[in-house]
Image (tube, rainbow, N blue to C red; front, side, top):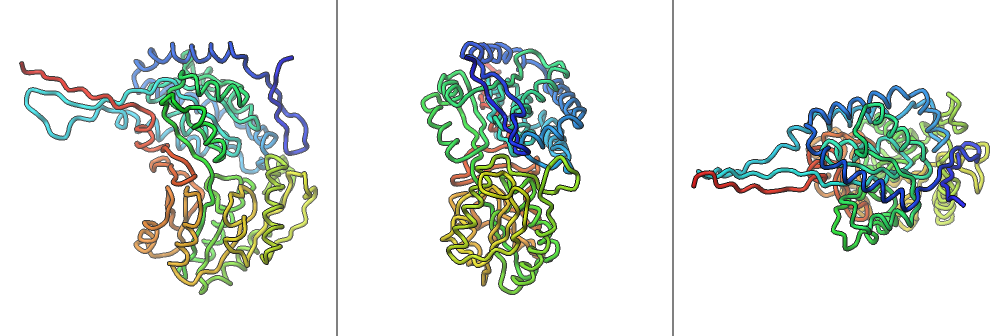
Length: 462
């Protein structure tokens, strides 16, 4: 009997899509095609590679009317927010734009008569992208485009929850005329993925997902010496200072906490507010949160759809219940149809009287719940922000830029924001520290992580 992957829609629990898992023979053939295609692809001029990427982008955008409800059916994001193509467009165009310069050979800094010396950036070879469901296009494009621009070939294994996204990328590339084997979408189970990573036939893997998933990938790849890019868990904090513009901070932090039902890698999961503005901030935050309309994501009025799976919502329920048992106070208590154990539909919640003995302030939630703590000063805020096994982003809300920089220098994260949050700027490297993983994407540094340096030391005068 053929093994399949079933995509269960969070909207109504129906099986929205089902695809056969590739056979071992098919997996081997895909890798062989990628390896065979890579040598020729590496010879294609960078400018021409960029034309393929921009054509792919155009083809994806042309599918918007089909893709937007498809995303809602797959992982629950409301159709009112459209697709992810604003960010996909910005990242693709930027990485194409900087490719020539980012991939150019680097001359030695100290010229020597009679010698030509430089470092060339060679493609890694075959790159595997293991993409998550929460932002299925954005997260995948972060590696797909720069890897292809750098001259590698790409094999995409997308999350089962967003099974159709890989097919959309494949359609867009095929319509763009990309040479066969340069990009391939595959459907694999966990055992096949681990076997492939341990085979020595993959040169680099980029994975976005859980800490446990990252550890499994490191274990599977052990001994192959392949390079890894791992973006794992997050528990991103915000610190609101007394001089912050409170209305601006409230509006942006509520959105940063609850957009996409809180299922954002860099979403706000905990907020520390200076005691001088605490009451004002909390009141505004609660009022803004109560404006959400939770329901069917196919309806335009819905501003928060179901979580991607019921078990994710149940984790939020567990975190809330534990916090309440330990003395936290819930402020929203919104009544939502189907909001019960075993359902992906859940209301957003704001908690106060929280502390770091509660899982909601320490462990990744990845859902629509946020705890807010009062702090007395910068020292207390920084200590609490750093009291986490994760370190993806942190946001600081103040009108004093130099103060924000000084605080940011002491915060253990890959990105420091001031007066904004929950955003990837493709001109800046995307990376994390501690259990958030290793490696780096986007920007010129992203290209450095997707290439292999090769030195040329040429004596020309003999």
